Image 1 (cartoon, rainbow, N blue to C red):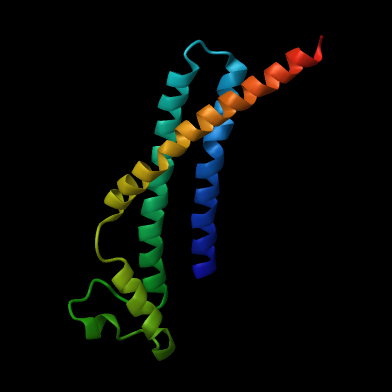
Image 2 (cartoon, rainbow, N blue to C red):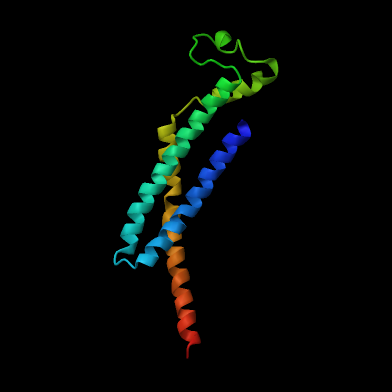
Length: 143
């Protein structure tokens, strides 16, 4: 169960890395006049929704794992919550329970996106300079 949750989180991270590159290549093929603005608007919308889904999944997967181990978060006391948890899973459940405390998943998504958003500019300028150098090599080779 934990491996599946980790695989899904890893898949979201891969999609977040690849999606701006794929989007920029699609926009280059359309030959738009305001490429940077259209790239920025669409990439922000797509990647922010992906970050929100990833943050929600992270929160939901912890709840799912806790219920899988027998933890009932709807009960009042800690002893009642841990009543159905086996002894070998007790440490793992306590670790998962303490990890879900703190800031909520929407704030985690916003903070993650603040650190992720410069990647969109890095992708744009990296592809721009790569295409520019590729075009200059092609024009220099035709002499």
